[in-house]
Amino acid sequence: MFNFWGSKEQLGESRPSSSEPSPQPWYSPSLVTSPSLSRPQSSSGAHIPSHVSPTEAASIISLLKDKSVDELSKLLTDKDAYQHFLNSLEQVTIQNNIREELRKETLHLARENLEKEPQMVELRNQCRIIRTSELATAQEKLNELENQRDEILKFYSPASLLHRLQDAMKKGDEESEELQQKYMEKEIDTAAFVQKYKKLRGQYHRRALIHLSAKTSFTG
Image 1 (cartoon, rainbow, N blue to C red):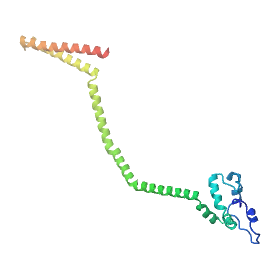
Image 2 (image 1 turned 135 degrees about the vertical axis):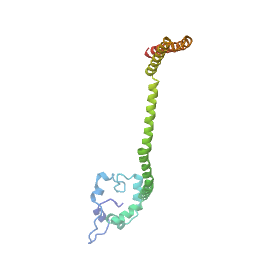
Image 3 (image 1 turned 180 degrees about the vertical axis):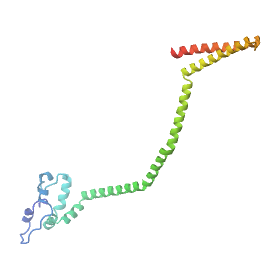
Image 4 (image 1 turned 60 degrees about the vertical axis):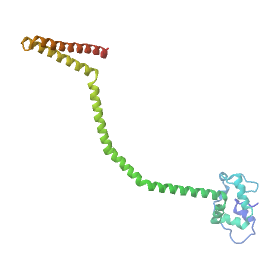
């Protein structure tokens, strides 16, 4: 069988000699002679590129075997003819269709992204406004609430409670002394003095008892 990937000299052996110079092949000779780009020859003598499966190679060879010597020669010397033949192969057609579908899908996605760009810009502007205004207001409110929380916790802390209890005891003690002074100066009668003094001292001792119990609990 004719070697599709053969050299120009092999082609000449299959044709009557002519005084006209043979057309030069459009491909580089190394393309069909390089071991790295071909497999061992098949039974038909054709070099099969390494990336072509046996089934695909058989399909290609079946298309070539019915072609005349002139047609095969034209494939070797006419790049356009070779490209037309290549594009007519089923495997190439499938790959071209897939590539075209991918190209269309890529263009479709690109158009969708471009159509969404104004919306994306608007969303970015809204986020910027939120960060510069609403977020700042919310942060200020949060800081205020945190300060209030700290004040409340400080007010009801053990140390603060003990301190206020001591102040109340001290104030009650001072009121008792003032009441005693009024009684000594005859500014209040005995019955009123006893009633008020008893109340003040009762409050003082209750606070003193609470203070002692709380201090022991907090420090113990």
